[in-house]
Image (tube, rainbow, N blue to C red; front, top):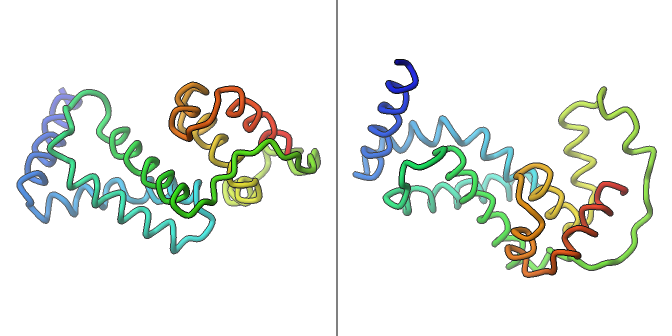
Length: 170
């Protein structure tokens, strides 16, 4: 019974937001923005840029809210828009370098990750070259397949696989 009520409440909130109800839009933003800021932060080192991307992403969310079909997770739908916003930003800034250059592998950085804080793991991810980081985030965190990553980044599937391998080794 609770699940149905929560789903109905969410659907009602979305409908109000589509009708430009500012309170409903604010509720959606407040509910999902902390998680989505974390998503932006995975792709962009600078917190100010991450916040800008978050706002751009939510602008797209509210602009396209009428396209949400109530199939699957609303949070997942928002997340996909935010991830695509980050990818577009990085593509425009020409910081996505998915080359096959070799980098120094650092085994010491990956030791004892079980005892490492989320902030420290994020710092390790931030140290990855942009291409490695992008593929790593899309595969390991977002759950995309290599074929989907290749299509999204306009690279070959084998390049995606090698970038992930190298990201794990750095």
